Length: 130
Image (cartoon, rainbow, N blue to C red):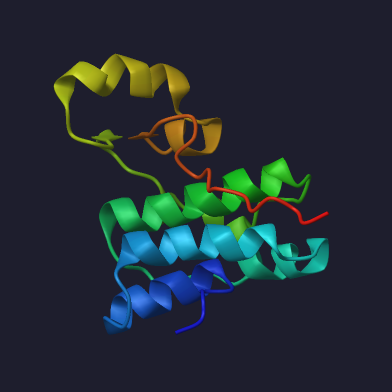
């Protein structure tokens, strides 16, 4: 199976059960690194289907965060009320990490009450061959 090429494709795979949510997000971020600017804009444009709760807010945060990193406008769908949580979600679930996650969480996640590490979307880069 090829990597997801859009935020909408992540949700589609998760909804159909053809790929788990977390691996689909990681694979999308890997694919993002190889995309052109226009492909990146298209990858966040289409609104994904709703999956419920944290996943809906998380996809909006990913789209906004990646778009802003590339000086692209975040997609309008990412600002819809159903893309925000009403209760905080802390990645990892450890009480001892909460303060660190609050401080480190990128703005797109924090404003949706999702608290993750600063490098939550970082992926290893391949070294370029000489």
